[in-house]
Length: 173
Image 1 (tube, rainbow, N blue to C red):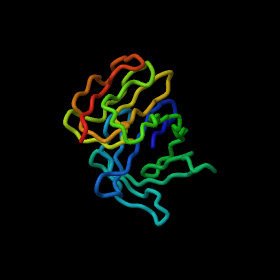
Image 2 (tube, rainbow, N blue to C red):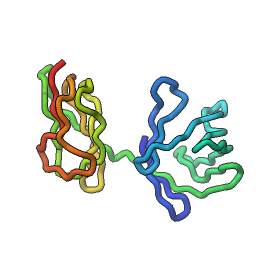
Image 3 (tube, rainbow, N blue to C red):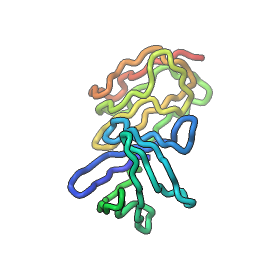
Image 4 (tube, rainbow, N blue to C red):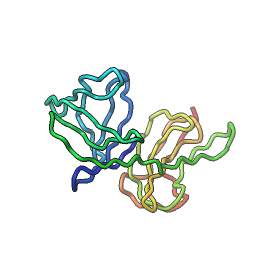
């Protein structure tokens, strides 16, 4: 899940994914940088009670609005007014190709590559997100259309690409 968060006058982009292995530990990025955040304690309803960030423990309590988004966050008893926007504008596009192998993953429109999620030699599955392309202030998840092995990554993070440019090449499994 992606969020834009404003705490007083500071703005952050927060990404929270379920952790690998231990499902109770989320993987958190703040402004596209990994954050060393561990959940130490949760209430019965699943809300946070305590987190460890950069080696320090903090008590946490969150007041939410009618949509379930935080309005105020108390960290070690200190209140912080927050504005949270859940980013739901991410679009996923896939071609209807049936069982046909598609060995090239192309930019669906001109833009900037924000993130390449795979490396050469890595196995991928049809529908897996392999890159994020930003265009017109919207992030677009680029997904594979076929199972395969990444042969070559042609794009770099931050690179400007044209529509139809081959970002990643695949070999069949």
